[in-house]
Length: 499
Image (cartoon, rainbow, N blue to C red; front, side, top):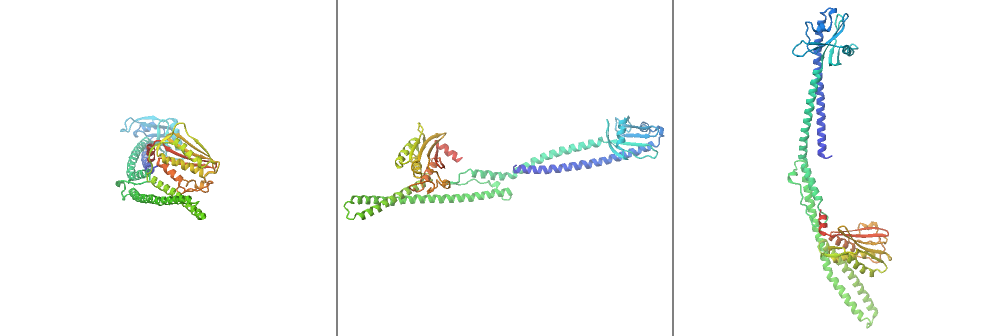
């Protein structure tokens, strides 16, 4: 349950319990008081009737004679008398006018007299009895000195009616009070918890922002009206605002460091291109001159040594040139540059890429699976060709001779899908998570004849993400597949990524 629901349940539950206890105590106290007052009335009526009975002769001692004599008992009085001569007789005084003490009599039946006798058995002098067709009565049997047995009683209907009215009033007042309490508590809690809802909404908006890349500025804050440090909930809002300020400053510092690092890589790569080009040019010029004068040289062994050294210089300069070019490309891709968009036919790129890969690894089996209709996307044709080339080169380099490599292109929904599958030994699970990291090398994952710079898959991943797509790998021994998915509508993909 929510905090508001728990608070309301606790408050209303405790108040309801208190009101019920008060109602029970009040009704019990009032009922006891009214019972005592009724007992006092019954006692007065019983002794008055006992005095009247003692004035009658035994042969005239009947309930009708006594109740219709000089003594006029109040309406509702139940009277039973027993004498050795007349036996048991009883009646109830009925009256249509409560202001008069006189009224008609209703004789008691034998069953009703028996019910009274049973209530007063075992020597009881005061009891409460429920009589057939008459209701509940409070009765008393005072002792007489002449052997006459007398029972007098008054109805309890008035007490029961008053208690019923009291409980009804208490119940209605309790229900009304609880409804008012619930409304008041709900409004109070809702107003008190409003700053917490503002904090939750602010945190949700911040959580939906993309904070892992690019320039990020957190502008969301808890409103000042909901961040009052004088209240407990306001302290939470103020603390969140302070935290967001700190995070925003940290993100800005991180972005500056990333931009500084990108500029450094880009500048370093750019500056290294010139000397590397010079080294490469001079080495080629020197090698060409040496080869031309090789037949006329007086010391062939010196020329051969010089030629070997220059060849190694040229090979390393080529390797450094590729490395610098790759680093520069990654830096520009990180900055959102280097991509020139146009219509790209992935089917044609796959055919060209496989044709370029076949001569480089004639000991592999190369297959292609493309649809009859072209699969086109909006992207950079040169960079997508580089993705295909890098994935095929990765499969060629890290699989042994005789491996079958299959390149396929398909359209699945709103995405263009390119897959490179091979039946080689698979990728070591220990390095699978770092496979697309920069300078990652899988020396122990597959048998390989040569080593690369470890930037091929990182470049492929950066290019694919620049096209709003993603690249994944699934590998087990004998079944490795690299899958590239690129949306055919980049605008829709960008909106989805932002959402």
